[in-house]
Image (tube, rainbow over all chains, first blue to last red; front, side, top):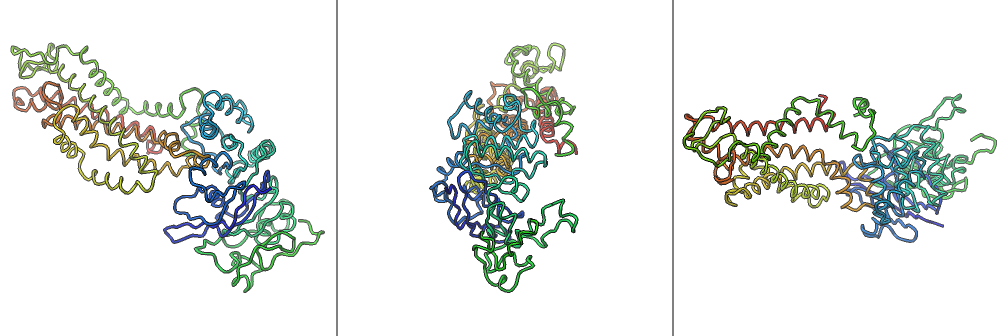
Length: 328
Length: 296
C-alpha cells in the first residue's frame, strides 16, 4: 500500500544569484512500513525534497507538483491543517542533534510540547509518556533524563531524544534527514537500531535521507538515487548494490570505503561536482562527469525507464548487468 | 564555542538550576566591576525602597533655623534652603527614580517585545514596523521623551509613560534582531516540523532564548530611564515639586550653588552612582551571557 506519493515535485529557490532549481520533477512512492532511502551527494536536493513534503521550506522557495499522504493531498492543504499533519502523521528527525534541541527547555518539556500539541496530554500524563518514549529509544534512567537540559546530553543521546520527540505521536511516516551523519560510527549503529526497532514497533514507514551507502545497506528496503534534483535510479536495496544501472550510482558505490577493494587502487571519486542549475536542461545532468556520455546525453533529456537490470533508470547508456561471477 | 567552552561545560552539572545559568552567575561574580555595580545598585534600591525606615527625617520636614547647613553628623548630606535634610531627600528621590525606571522599562518591554517578535517572525509586518522604529530612533531618546512629556503634561505617571514610550523603538529593534537570528535555529525548524503553532514557536522557543539579550537590554534602559526622569523633572516636565525627585533637587539647588553646593552635589552624585552602577552591572551581565565576548 502506498503511504506517500510524490509526483513531479519541483522546487525552485529565488536567490540573490538568480533562480536555483533544487528539485526537478522528482517522483517516488513510499509504501507503508517501508524504509526508503533517498541517496545522493550533498546539494543534490535530498533535504529540500524532504522539507518540501510538508512545506517546511523558507519563503523564497516555490514548490510545484503534488504530495499525497494516505489519500490526502498535502500540497493542497491549508497551513493550519498541515500543522496537524506535521509531527502527528509525518515526523522529522534532523541531521544536527547538537542544535536541534532548544537549549533552554528540559528534555521532558520539549517532548511534552509535542504531546500537548497533538494529543492534548498535560502534566503528569505527559511526563509519564515522555519517560516511556525515552525508554523506547534506549535512553538509560529516563526518569532522571527528562529533567535535564540538552547540553547535559551527548550527541547520540540528543539524537535519541530527537527520535523520541518525532515518534511521540506514533507517526505513519518518519522523515530522517541524515540522522547519523553528525555522530560517531559507533553511535550510528545504535541510532539505526532504534530506527529499525521503532519501525516494527510502531509500524511506521521511514524516508531516510543519507549520502552514506553503508547506512542504506544496513537499513533500507528500497533506494531512490538523486542527482542534481532529478531521481535517476530506483531499485530495491539488494538489486541496487548488485546491479547498479546508472553510471552515477556505480560511482557512488565505488566511492564507498571497502577494505576488500583497497588492494587495487583504493577509493575512486567521481570527478567534478553537482551542478547548480537555474533551469532544467534538455540533457542528462550527469553528462559532464560521466565517462559514458556522448552527444545524445548532452542534447536530450533521458527519462526514467526500465533499464537492463529491470528497475527504472534515467540514462541513455545504462550499465550492462554484470556477469554473476563478478563479485559485487 | 568549541575548545574554550569545554572545561566549563563538562563541569559538574547536576541539580535543578540550569547549569548555564550558574555558569553565568560564576562568570559574573568573577568580574569585580560588575560585582561593584551590583552592590551599589542593591544598596541604592534597598535604601530607596526602605526610605521611610532608613531616612533620619521626614523628607518634607522644614527647619528654618537649620537652613543651608553643610554636611554634619546630624545632616550627613547637609540641609537645603528650607532646612530639609538632604540625605532623607536623596533617599526619597531615589525611590522615585527606581519607580520610574522599573515602570517605564516594564512598559517599553511590554509593548516593544511583542512588536519586535511579530516584526521578526512575520516578514510582511517587518517593513512597516522597522521603518517606524527607524524613524523614531532618528530622534535622540531624551528629545522624544521631552516632547511626549510636554504633550502629556507633567506628572509622575506621564513622565513614566513618556520615558517608556521613548524606549520602545530600541526594544523593538533588539527583539526583532534576536527573533530573526533565532528563527533560523535548527530547533525552531524542528519545532515547526513537529507541528508547533506560531504561538508555541514564539513563546516557547524564540522568547526564552531571547531572554538573555532582553535582560541586558533592560539593564541598559534602566539608567537611561533614571536620567530621563531627572531631566524631565529638572525641566519641570516630570514629577511636580511636592514629590521628591533628584531632578527637582538639582533644579532647586541652582540658585544656591555658591552658598550650598552640597544641595547639587549629593543628588548629582546619587544619579551618577546609580546609573554608572547599573551600566557596570549590565556590561558584566552581557559579558557573562556571551562567553566569546568576555574572553577578548
